Image 1 (cartoon, rainbow, N blue to C red):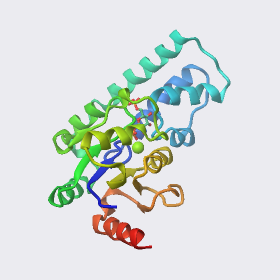
Image 2 (cartoon, rainbow, N blue to C red):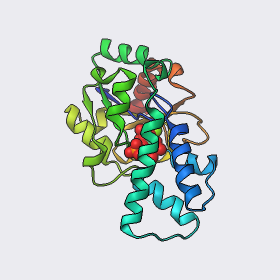
Image 3 (spheres, protein in one colour):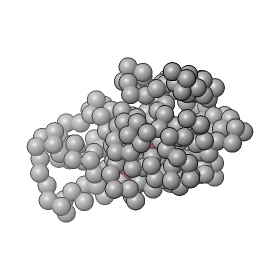
Length: 222
Ligand code: B16
Ligand code: MG
């Protein structure tokens, strides 16, 4: 493999919006009389909005009609948008800017593969929208993570073969998506959780591009 692009997930890799998703989903669940805790929220990392609501309803075997389902999605997102209103460049995780600058110096393209339909808004608020060579559109792919679609669409947009892309993810569903896309997977978080990733860094500030390249070259010689 010749590394030509690194494709990043957003929530949990470049910034932490999980708490905001949690508050908004908890309010939705509470309204429905369904218990929703941090453990549930962990399971929803990287899972898109529709499937997140399906997970919550399934907890209590609750069935709602289409109109109600759409209303719940709209209300959750409205609250989420209010909660992220105050985020700015200071909410970018430590290590992201220096990592991007290392990649740019090495002529490596940078892509964004988020399951979030709010991704463009969030990266604009973070002030990093101009640093990407291609930004994937979660609304335009047929299947969400763990399907490979969003990572494959970003590789296509970057004009780089999937086998020459490195994907970076914090969620189990996201790492599965990277592996299904036939890319090298870097996890951000706990190696005991992100077991499918070839390499795991505890946080973006520990992201070591030289170590990624060394691991890649070791893999191609074995
Ligand atoms: P939205 P990522 C994912 O983003 C989040 O991890 C997940 O918790 C959220 O439900 C999903 O985006 C959809 O977000 O409601 O904003 O469309 O981690 O893939 O960047
Ligand atoms: Mg994520």
